[in-house]
Length: 510
Image (cartoon, rainbow, N blue to C red):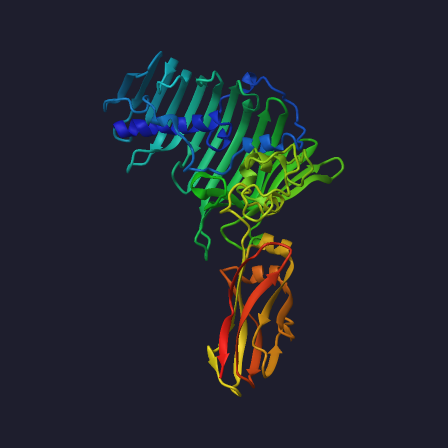
């Protein structure tokens, strides 16, 4: 039973942790409790602008990052030594202040109601003070680990004040159905009041549904999701939230999340509507060649003019970070302020031509490719390996030699589009006899230079969906007529840096 009580309290604190961080909409639930009278902010339709769109986007966090959320459930209250009996009336340990839990539990079904009350309670002994109360009604649990599956939770002036004197208070109701299963529903009616201005939120019947989606031919997991309801931000007013055919990819590559994995939008759209504007996040896997990378298009529509004031695309993991969604460019250097904040660049000074991590790629280029300008290991992906197939080490005068120019290329699609066309060349020290070059890529031999111009990086990127693209740029027929020795070594010419490995070769003619 001790484990059961811990899991029960955990289901509540999971929500409180998220709300305290300003992104609790994805983890809350709702019910019939009317808390609208407790909301003290702007109650008219909001004007969504470039300055506040990140706040609205983060107020409804559809993406549940299970492995990164810190749970207050690890505190002393959750570890309290409750005995296995149907009627509960216990004092919880606090370093200062007091707390208690009361309720009744069905010892067979492990369902029932528990009410937690706090009075200036320092749960962790770290100066974080808990006040108020919350009540949880658990109607279904997992019999294997006693974790709650269906819960209904009500909050009454439940407040957490941190050691720096900031506070977050919750009132209202949340309802969870199917926790830990493939069919979940969360409904939230909550008023969040905070000393931090942007965290004052009221969610009215905000509903999230997620079900497992079984998609063939993929190593990833997906969820179908739907979102509906209304969100009020105290400083701005309300928006109506809706979704269409929303598909979420689970635990794919993220350049920001701890552990490098996160949930991301894969397909469909999520929209925030006011009377005057619409903020939309639209995703489509068809626009991304690497299944571990997804793009999201962010648009802001002015309904009166029917014109888009914002129309940008970014990696889907970025579209869920409030900071990145600061899309102003204060210093006019071509990089969003949010991107510069995220990676420690100066949004007040044009530093686009600088190379912060000294990896050979400018900050501005890394912004275009959404790599990290402060990490030399996170850089644009572009590499070619050039070599000659079937060049013998030893050749005899009059011997016919047939060789192929092989290129193995690996390009990230975004970078390939920026590179465009590039050229490769090789200095040929072997000059005697007959040389015939046959190439569909326009490779020619001019004097002692072998050159292939106008090779398309985007075409190579498209062909390297499942790894490297191997191309035979041309064939060479050589019949030497004199003794000599020499080598062939490759180089490239492009507007941007490409990693090159040259494996030409040397030969001796006898």
